[in-house]
Length: 383
Image (tube, rainbow, N blue to C red; front, top):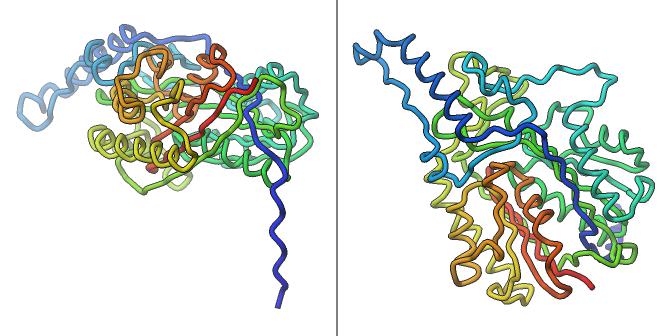
């Protein structure tokens, strides 16, 4: 019988040293998106006019700026490939395939965000032990995107990919923190390149406005080597509950394109009302339970950096946590200009709206999405 090994003592105290952000140059406004979508609707309805007149098919309905903003709070989104998305004959991104010896587009934007995080922390790649690529949709199954990012940065260590949809970044932060607590690493990059425009059905009125592209990076380190300006990680909590209400069936066994008939479920699909009804109370209670476990007064949280998927969801969750209607300072929004960027959303909010907090202020980074999956990272600003 093999003798059991003693559990290693926890040796590190994880903190967030810095963050990085890459934002694509191209933006699609709601006005541009609606014009393109409605042109597609006109073409579709004209092509199927006889079937529609005979009652054999339903006409597609127009989208509108008012509908989009009421449903989501989104006003614009950044994308990597604008012109094809707005072309009624294409309506999906078209990124040229690169040779195997070229840096992939997903690694490229991940590297850009990672370099900014390293620069802000005063770090070099030689200081980093591991890279976790945490994102909703990987460009390929293997080699791992994380290893390509690691190679491009010149990091001597290890890397791997992880996908928990919109909660990938918070799951990555806890994983990185656990490595540091166990003494297996002192500095870990959690990189989330989210090219979510590629999994969106731009021809679906109920979801064509949701997603945008971006890349974020979070540098999680041992407090012993962290810069003076950092965020103590007070505690993390992860939760998953299986649900089909957000799903994407694309995979190597069922390759498909948006132009192929019957492929709607090979792109992003959701039952939005069910998601809203089920996720809001689950996430709010999870936050309250974890705050109680950590001895944190939820009403005393200085700021909430919530997942940027839907303005209404964030408003209700923040109200349940803080005990009152949150203002923009307490629960900042980037959804209006970035759209839903999956796991990167809460990190963008943290990156752009955290420098003004004072030492001792506490806050919460929180994600929630497909799976269902949810993650909380309670933090306190160090002096």
